[in-house]
Structure formats: C-alpha cells, structure tokens
View 1 (cartoon, one colour):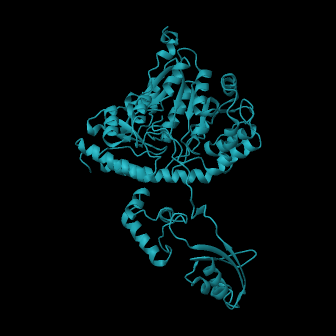
View 2 (spheres, one colour):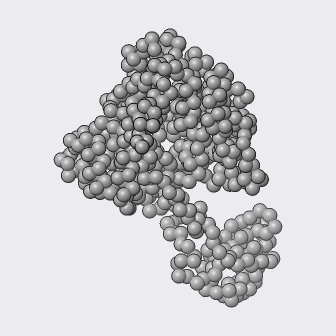
View 3 (cartoon, chains in turn green, purple):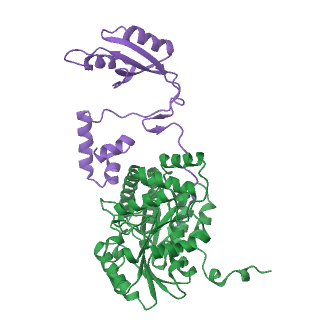
Length: 393
Length: 159
C-alpha cells in the first residue's frame, strides 16, 4: 500500500524544509561549531527553573484554564502595558499558547478563509509561509533587501495589497536578519492597515533583544492598531526558555475568543509548569534578561566587525541574535557556501535561502554561542572566504 | 560600573583589543582607562579562580569570626588592617551582626591554622574573641560554580 497517496494534498504540496536537510548533514559530523541554532546558549535562569520545580513539588500538575493561568495573564498584561504601551484585559484579551508557533497557527486559522492573502516580509522565520498555507490562506511575500537593511518599505506593502488581502504580518526584530523597522515606515504601514481595514499580526518575540541603546517601539503604539492587531510574543528568546514552549497572543476579545475556540480543542492548555515558570520570569527575570542581552550585544559587535574585516559586507543587526552575512563576494550560492564551509572547516551556518528566495547569497550566523567558539568560527570563516578570492579589508 | 570594568571583572583574560571590539569603543581609550585603573588601584590585580579539589593544594581554609574593640578615632580600621597584613589572611571584611571581622585564613593544615589563631590573632591587643569555622567544600567561588551545568543538548541547526 502506498501511504503517500493517503497523505493530504495540502501537506504533500509543502516542500521539505531546507533547514532539515542541512540539519541532517550537520548531525552526521562530530565536533561542529554551530552558528546554526535559533536559540540562546544560556540555560533558563536558575530562579525561573527553581520556581517551576517548586510548583511541581507542590503538586501543580493539572490542566489550567484554556486561556492560561489567570495570574500569568495578569503578569503578561502589566508587562505588555509597560513594554508595548497598550493594556489588555487579562480576562478576555490574552491567550497563553504552546510557543509563539501555536499562537501563529491559531491566529491564521482563526482569520483566514480559503484564498485570503497574508502579506509578510522575507527573509523570515521558516514557518510563516507554510502556516498561512495550511490555514487555507495565500502567502504573499515581500522581498526585503540588504541595501535597505532588510526593513519593510510601506510602498512595497501598498503595492502588494489586493481585494483579497486579509492581514499583514510583521516580525521586527527579524529572524534571520536582525532588522529593526524604522518608526516612519512602521507608521505608514499602520496607516495602510487602517485605510484598507486589514488585520495586523506582529511577532515581537525578539523585542527585548535590542542593541545600541535602542528601545522597543511596538506596532501597537501607532494609531488604530490595538483594535486590529494580534500581538504574538513569548518567553523563548529573552528568558532563554525555548524548551518550555510557552508563548501568548494578545488581541481584541473577539479575536482572542476565536483563537481560543481552536486552542481548546487542539491543545486544551499550555503546560502548567511552564506557566508557573513564566510568572517567575515576568516578575523577577528582568535583570537576567539584561545580562544576557548585553552578552549578545558584545558578541554581535565582534562578529559584525570580523565579517567586515574578512570582506563580507554585512548589515549591522539592530536586534535578535543573528547576522545575515552577505556571501556574494565569494561567488558561491548560499547552499554551496554552507556545505563547503561545513565540510572544510566544521562550522555550521544556515543557507539564507531557507528563509525565502531573497535570502539567496546570504548565510545566517547565530551569535548566541560562547565567545571563544565564535572567534574560532570567525577565524575559520576568514580563511574560507579568503580561499574564495575575497580580499580582506 | 563602567562596562569595561564589568567585562574584565568576569573575564580578566580579555585583551584591550577584544574589549574594544566587544563594546565598540576606541582601542586607545580602552587601554588608557585600564592602565589608569591599574595605577589608581581600582583594579587591584588579576587572579585565576581555582577549584580547591583540583588544584593539588592540600591547604585548609577557615573563616574566623573575630570580635574586636573599636578604638577612639580609628574605629575598627587600624586593627583590621594589622590583621589583614598577615600572609595567612586571604581576605578580611568588617561585618554587621554578631561579630566584627570575617577573616579568611589559609594554612597547610588544621594545626597551623589553629596555631595562627591562638598565637597571633587571639593574643592581639584589642581582639576580644574568635570563633573558627573550617571550610569543608567549595560549591561556588567568585560567581563560578564548581560543577558547571552541561550546556544542554542544543540542536546543531534550528530555525
């Protein structure tokens, strides 16, 4: 019996992730320095872990409310009020999810009718396109460019709007480029959403990790946004809690209720121990986040200056913990670069085209790696790049 | 605290060029500041933090809780400084609470430490009493865990 024919056409139509192919290649080798990860190199701060252990010891092992523990939603409400400048009602406008990934899936499934278009910007996190598609929507990618520092231009958004456009999805700071949207463009995009009566989705998962003294300016600060926006946020990046799988969405009550309908059947609730840990994170985690942020910033500075020295013109990322290195001077494609560099120097970077076709000519390097390892990786990259005829500066 | 100080306090092996690169500061400026701090005693020195179980040193360490009589004019300082000058004293702090000085003493064995306390410390003019607590095991020193956690199994490539 051929099982392939039993798999839905929709799922069959999704190509295998480029990241997975590359992952298997890396896994087969030993002693690799990996700049290919998408997560912090820190363990979750001990006080957060300890709070979760304490909750387990007390026997907190049950389901929670579908929306998540009310004390957690209250913490989220006051945190978002400070961080993003808008206040959500913990009773009706916040839903705790299993990572931002689930929140994203809920949002698209709650919003999209078959054929509805969602505008988003590439290069981007790998799940946006397939998640829109699996929800029955049509992904409409806008290609951002290195010469614009990978920011999204409002004029490009305007050109992509059609009568079928349902929503615009933003992710700043961006995985994989570290781009931060300038307020003047953000303001214009917000105005477009109001003018065309579109829903906004904003994935602000990296918003605590901003550098050069910049403060986060949430999309929600712009006029008309709160009533049409789904804010997606979570604990993975800032608090180094990737494995806890905890995120949340904040949205007007009607949208939250729609997402909740799916969540209650698909997931029921997020794990209680993760929710307990998240309360501790929001109440007392700020100093640990700041320590980690400073450490990422220092490492970013080293990596960016090394990339420039070796002759790769690279945008200086304003946030997150990635640099999207421009490898076009080597004459290699992203995939060739990543594979040869891995084979010859045992360093893993992710081919840029895994994040959208306009990522071709780039590789993503994650600098959430210990500094000595990072410097060794940069030494090796300098040698590799020089061997491909790129003159150092 | 100056970010340069903060950085080298955690890792004294960082060179001035490394510090300058990490903080995007001018190298000359960084080197100048570090030299100035070394001169004015802001940076008292550079030491490696050793795990006492691995360093091959059989010395014992004791915390001596010392009560002293403050002096008119000088308070605790004169006596505390005299105590600190002994080579056996690794650290000495003035404390609030039940005793005055926390004196960390190192010696080749228990008897030597006891002798130092009896002959040198207790007999000093102004020392009222001492209580000696021997250190059994170090779990954390200078912010460093003796048993570092394994970094966890991060996937080598993830989105």
